[in-house]
Length: 88
Image 1 (spheres, rainbow, N blue to C red):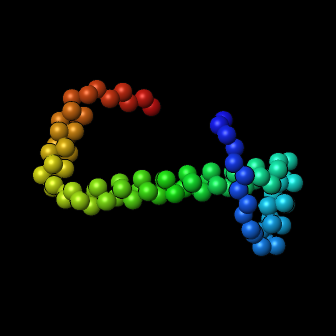
Image 2: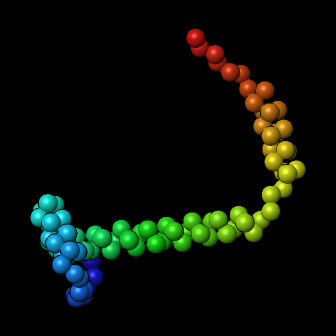
């Protein structure tokens, strides 16, 4: 781990009490509770951004009905040639 920095974050009484309770319950420090909360929040923001890009990419590419039909027909030909072991 690299150099650590100290960040002061003002919080109201209710948030502070929750942080203290979580720290006590988990046996960790208030700083660790805050650090973990940030890591989870940061991961969620990244995941949301990737999801947004994924959806945008698909919305920019129109569906091609012929491609889907071709894939279904091809899969049908391949699967019909396979031997299926029907155990009872």
